[in-house]
Length: 112
Image 1 (tube, rainbow, N blue to C red):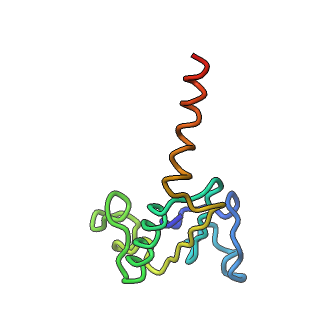
Image 2 (cartoon, rainbow, N blue to C red):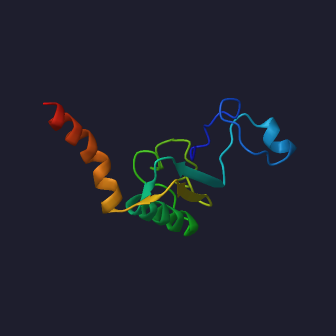
Image 3 (spheres, rainbow, N blue to C red):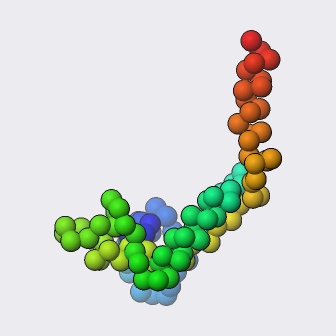
C-alpha cells in the first residue's frame, strides 16, 4: 500500500475526485488499520513510531525503503506524509491476551 502499487480495481478506496478515478494505482495519505479480535499496546507503539517517522519526513528503511539502487521508492520517501490510524474491537493487555493462547492448550490437555 505504501509503495503505491495497490490496484484500485481490486481494493477500492474513497475517491479524491476525478484525478483519482483516472489513476490505476494510488498511494494513500491516510490508512485505517482495524484489527478484529483486538490490538495490543505493542502494535499501537509501532504505529505511533511509524507516524512519528513519517511526520519527520523520514520514509521507511530496510528492504522496501532502501534507495539508491534504482528502486521505485522515490529516494527513500515511502510513507512520508502518510498517517496510520490503529483501531480494533478491543485493546489487549496481558490479562486478556495470554488466555487466548492458553485456552486451546487447556482443551488439548483435557482431551489427552
